[in-house]
Image (cartoon, rainbow, N blue to C red; front, side, top):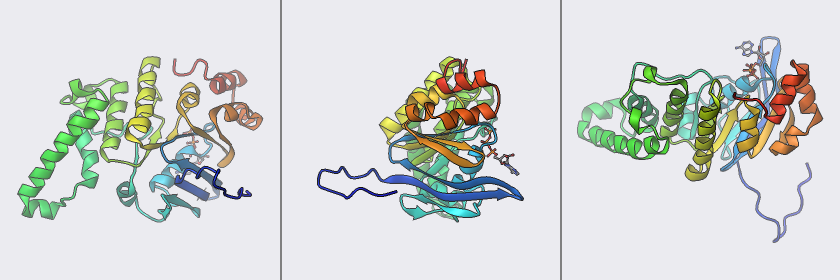
Length: 284
Ligand SMILES: Nc1ncnc2c1ncn2[C@@H]1O[C@H](COP(=O)(O)OP(=O)(O)OP(=O)(O)O)[C@@H](O)[C@H]1O
């Protein structure tokens, strides 16, 4: 791409928060990702879409460190994190939720959320044993912070002491978001945040995701099949098909892209395609 010459009138480009550059991933002989490149700008919502088997989860797993790509690089604020392990990425500011809720179902909402924050606690186990007072003070500080900010923000105060297993699916997804927020991420990765939700739960979650971006200044990368929600709240949409980026841009640009339509057509029912791309009938 040719860069335009900078001038005093040219606004400074928005820094790429996350930059994925030329990523390649193989499973044995299967090429799951080929030369995948895109960026997540600071303070934006980027959606990753594509038909089933397109490579979205594989890409998510590369970014969060569960898979090691064979080619390419992943940079967070310019720092190469391609070879780092998931806990190091968490410390660098990455947090994620999972397609299938990954909470401790027998524990309370509050305890689940606190587990997220523990990723960043200053006091390690040895220090905690030696300096119990400091650990205790930090624990209290943590509790106050968790209670005040995240629980209030996500409107889950009334269920804070309930076991997760007793909650509706929509509330469990909200608790998972709360736990990810407790990790104090700079980039939050959401894997199908509204999958399986009814319309009301979907609208609530979409509002929370927007607020996470706008009020907390956290950048978001999400995989989602609910096109109405994707087109509604995303700033940038990246489309994968057979492990390759086939289109990216503003939601409206992607919606009108014939290659995107063809990709979804090739994957199944044309009527379903039109519903998906127009966002009609999703998340009923
Ligand atoms: N652990 C694995 N071992 C072997 N092949 C895999 C593995 N995980 C994914 N694949 C294959 O890699 C390709 C991409 O799968 P992936 O799950 O990333 O797609 P996806 O876009 O997330 O699909 P969906 O929307 O159905 O979740 C598929 O062909 C899939 O069968």
